[in-house]
Length: 179
Image 1 (cartoon, rainbow, N blue to C red):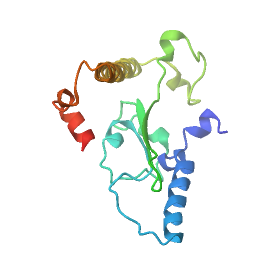
Image 2 (image 1 turned 90 degrees about the vertical axis):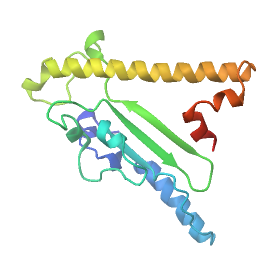
Image 3 (image 1 turned 180 degrees about the horizontal axis):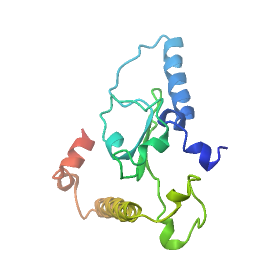
């Protein structure tokens, strides 16, 4: 297992080594079984860090050479608050995407006091940008919490017969999912 200091030097590609190996084996299995390799237009297995990278099209892959740490302060001030991991297996129905938060809002809870990602003393003090990033992370947490709550409520109402599939089709996001 890598130390926190070693993990910050990983690339997006290194984060998903195990998943990429499974993906490659599933393609090899299809070739060995003489099955045609069909482009299902699903994304390749990938990890993407930060707001610019996580909004990339499905055709884009993980960064192979840039360390994850470099995604912090990518525009000179804003740190990456989240990453996404996407995985699709070609021979099964297994597909998932997960968001990973790269912050715990630890300063508010005094969690990890005295633990730093770098050894430079100048980077170990609270900064205005760090406090702004913390506020942005809290907003991102709240958005995900609202999304999960809305999904739970809609699912419960649908299962109890309070809303129908036609009611759900009124939402553009559900229409795209239902195709």
